Amino acid sequence: MSRRKKGGGGEDCGSWMDTYGDMVTLLLCFFVMLYSMSTLNQQKWEIFVKSIFPSSDDTPQIAVNEEISDGEYDVSGNLEFDETISDPENPDELYVALMEALNGSGIEGVSISREDGYTFLVFDKQAFFEGNRSNLTEEAIMILDVLCNVLSQYEGSIAQIDIMGHTAQANPDRENNPRTDRILSAMRSAEVAAYIQEKDIMDPSKLVGLSYGQYRSVSSNDTSEGRARNRRVEFVIIDQGADIKSMNDYYDEFTNSMDAGNVLVTGEGEAFDTVGGNSEEAASAVPQEEINPPDGSVQPQADTQAE
Image (cartoon, rainbow, N blue to C red; front, side, top):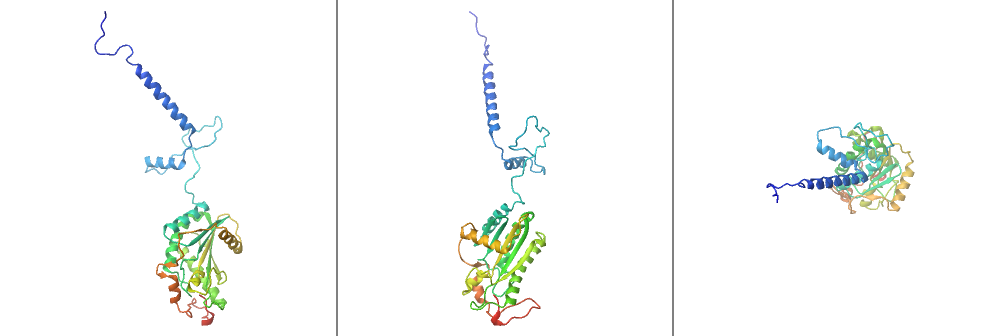
């Protein structure tokens, strides 16, 4: 009887390698099949590549989910894909960015409506101005800084920004003096436009100031709180390439959106809080007869003031 040689081995000692190789091959085929059915995420691809090459300015490009005709395979290594992450030319993203920035800064009560071709902003719960004044308050400056930071990123998507200035009636039983009323509201919109222009974030020709005076009030002038809401500013940010409509159309569409509940409002609460205190207190602290028109303008009579 023959004896088995010591040391093991035998004729079938390598058969397990065949089984292992077959398993690896099947797994590879399985993952190739999964990959062929998958949808690549372009943003994740960029993040992945940049994590490997953090110092590289040029991110390798890849064609994602594109239909390629038979025989039209690009093997040059320079495949391209459409940009789908942040698009500074997209006004819809500007709308979202404004809402996120205002909410993130704790700015409450700003009404924002996204309409066809423009975005409408109403600051009627922020004390941009004290009574009978056109100077920007500390709260107004803080809000405009947040606004300018967003606008600077989407300047290319903006054709024009209309800034509407408003006043309140100092005497709810009698209309303001027309000259004082118009000049004061014009100064308010001009102050806002000048502040944005000084930031040097966009072409100054895109900034348009409008004066409405007392004639588009949003609250009663019987109380200091109501007058604080009326002396406000509003913005119409018109998209690049959109048709310029009449202001009545903009207001009508915004009002309809308000009635339909399609207007978003930042934060919560109804208080008129300001950096320097409650706006109602600020309004009552200003003497009713006090007004400071611009240099060279006519000093109005006390009973014909605007607020």
